[in-house]
Amino acid sequence: MLGVRFHPDAAEEDGLQSGAMVAREVECAAKELRAFRSEGRQQFALAAVAFGLALTASQLRPAFAVPLLFGGIGALFLGVRASARRWELIDRLALDRDAYGIPEVRERAAQAATMTSRRALASSIHILLSQPGLAAAGRVRAVAKDLETLAAELDDDGLALDPASAVACARLLDAAAESPLRNPAAAPEDIHARIVQILTGFQARRA
Image 1: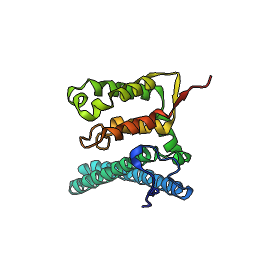
Image 2 (image 1 turned 120 degrees about the vertical axis):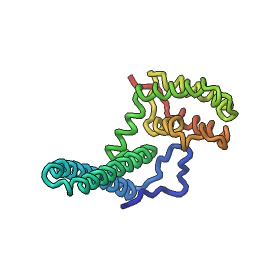
Image 3 (image 1 turned 90 degrees about the horizontal axis):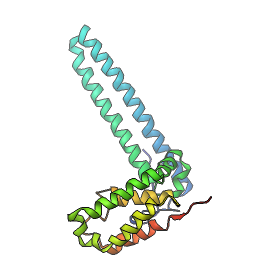
Image 4 (image 1 turned 30 degrees about the horizontal axis):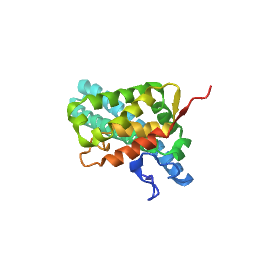
């Protein structure tokens, strides 16, 4: 399986990786996505056949039913894993504007920038700031004003949001394992810098 390589000087922490991929890497990423999609479809089809044969065998040849059933379960697991890896790759690529030549990635990023998604993110900020434990945490308290500003701009339908910035915002608020908002060791300065970068993605909508 081909991997997606990023330039070493492209800091993933900042959530914005514009220019981080070259054309060849985008092509490799597209091939990898197609491979995951093909693998998923093949495994799901195989699982369907195995389950169908297991059902038939349970009536005609019961001894074969259990092996076919387990074979179907194994194929289903592989199909789910391929699909999950595909969506994980799409989410990662959506941070890089250079990858927007891939339709799936472009659609994922565009979806993150819709007002529906933005309002959900703004709601996440309000919930975050209302949680006693997190709201009282030094790193969150230090950037509370920044978060309030971000929520206000997310809710403002007079502003358009760059798709890559929208994805970075979603990562900041929703990715519990990666977000510095959830990481007790994160410095407030790092969170502030990331919010500022996201805020630069807003601009007035054109009439």
